[in-house]
Image (cartoon, rainbow, N blue to C red; front, side):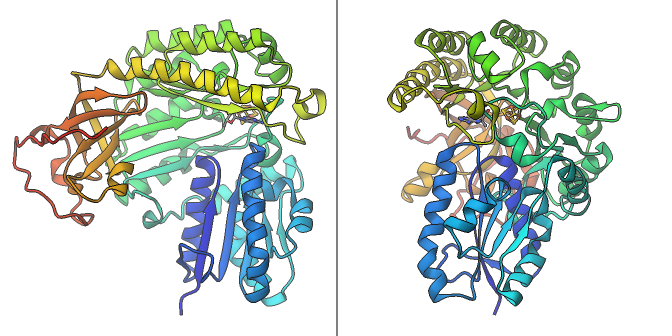
Length: 487
Ligand code: 5AD
Ligand code: SF4
C-alpha cells in the first residue's frame, strides 16, 4: 500500500514552490497525496510567520491533531518552513505530538527525517542555526533541490515558479523574513537557465521568477535584467514574470528589459507599504514617498503599458490619521492595478517589535484597512474599465471559481493577460493551457469579462487534449464563442 501524505501550505509563492518540491521528493519515495488528515501517514504543515494570523491557523490545526496522534501514534506530523525556523521551542511546548520541525533551508532532508522519526519515535529537528550557517545550507539546497521538479505537482503543468534568490538583507522593521529566510543569496544564472530549459522541456510555458526582493538579484556581474535576457529565448517559454520588487532597486536597465523583451510581462509588483515619510522611516524602507512616486513615473515612462500593483500595511506603530491619509493619497494617485492591504501584526524578533509599541487599536486598523480597500477598488475599476472594447491575449489557466461552484451552464474559464489582469470568459476546457485572444466587454474591480476570438487564438495546435473533463463543443476556425457573461 502506498503511504499517504497530507500537506497544508500557508503563505507566499515561495512556500507554494517549497511545497511543490516537498511533494515531488516524497512522491519519489512512493507517497500519494490525500485530501484529509484522517487516512494520512504523514501530515505536514508548510508555515508562514509574516503575520500572527497565519501562525494561529497552524496552532489550531496542530491542536486538532492531538487526539488523532493518540489514536494513530504511527502517523508522522511535521511543521515546516518559517514557523519551524522561528519558533521551535514554542512548537515543542504547544504541540508536543509534533515529530518533525524543519526549517526552509532543510526541506531536502525531509525523506530522511520522516524515516528517522518513524524508526526512533523521537523529535527530529533540522534548522538553520544562524544567518551565516543558512548561507551554506542554501547553497547546498540550491544545488540539490530545485532542479528536481515534477510537473504533475503543479496546479497547472504549463506554469511554474523558479526561485532565483532566497532570503533578504533589507531588514524592514516590521518584517520577520530576514530572520526566518536568512541572508539574501542569488542563484547562479546558469543554474536558473538550466532549470527554465528543463521546465520548458516538460511543457511549461509561463515561468515566474521568485525572490523576496527579486529585482535585487545579482550574481557576479549578472543583474535581473541580464538574467531575463539570458532565459528569454528558451524554446517553449512564452511568458516570464518576476515577483516581488523592492522600490529602491528598480533600475532603468530592468525597465528597459521589461520593455524590450516581448516575453517578459509588463507587470511589476512593487510594494510601497505606506505613503507617509515618517512611517516609511520607522519601517526602515530606505526611500521616501517622493522617491516612490518618481519610481512609478519612471516605470510608466519607460514601459508605457505596464501594470503596477502594490502592498500596504495599515496601523503600523505610530501611524496617525494624518499619516494614513497620506497613504490614501498615494493609493488614489498611484493607478495601481491592485493592492494587497494588511493590518500591521507585530512580530517578536523584529526591530519594529523591539523599538515601537503596537499602539493602533484593532478597530482602527480594521477601519483603515476597509477605507484603503475601497479607494483601491475604485482605482482598480478605473484601471479595468479601460480594457473594455480592447482585445487582449490570455493564457487560459482553468475553470473560474464560479464554474467550480455552478456545474450547470456553459463552462466559465479564467486566465491572465501578460499584464496579470484576470479575465473570465466562456469556452471549451480544451483551451486550458493555450494562449488565446479575448475581446473585453465588461469589467469589475477584480475581473475583466470577455469573449474568446477562437479563430485568432495563438498556439492553437498546442491545445492540451488530455485535460478535457467537460464535454467539449466543436470549435472551428473563425468560430466565435459568444456566450452570456456571468458576473
Ligand atoms: N504585518 C503586516 N503585514 C506585513 N507584511 C510583512 N510583514 C508584515 C507585518 N508584520 C506585508 C508587507 C509585505 C507583504 C508580503 O506582507 O506588505 O509586502
Ligand atoms: Fe521583508 Fe522588507 Fe525584505 Fe520585503 S524587503 S522581505 S518587507 S525585510
